[in-house]
Image 1: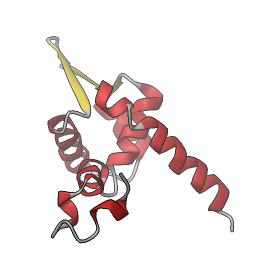
Image 2: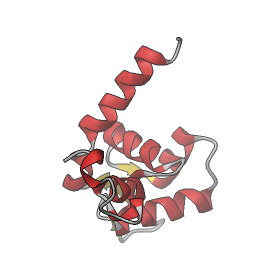
Image 3: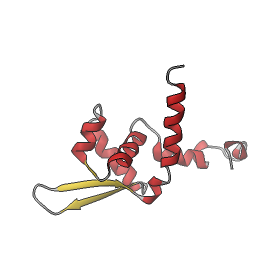
Length: 113
């Protein structure tokens, strides 16, 4: 089913599969986080922060919590001192990777046009 299949049938874009997808990966940071986890999992919070760069600790923390709540990211805490927490993608999130690859290919073809 494509976007046209829902035309006129819903009152709100959020009620469509496209709207659901955007609610999971939309915003400035979530696709970046998923992409970096795919390349580097498991990864610790500070390493993820360092690789992203321009994100605040508070924003990264909230984005990871949202992704975890949506079943996209798994958080594993190791009981040690200092505490060690690692993040990895869930199987659900891994099904998005071909779509992210497609977005990367589109960017490679169109970035310099």
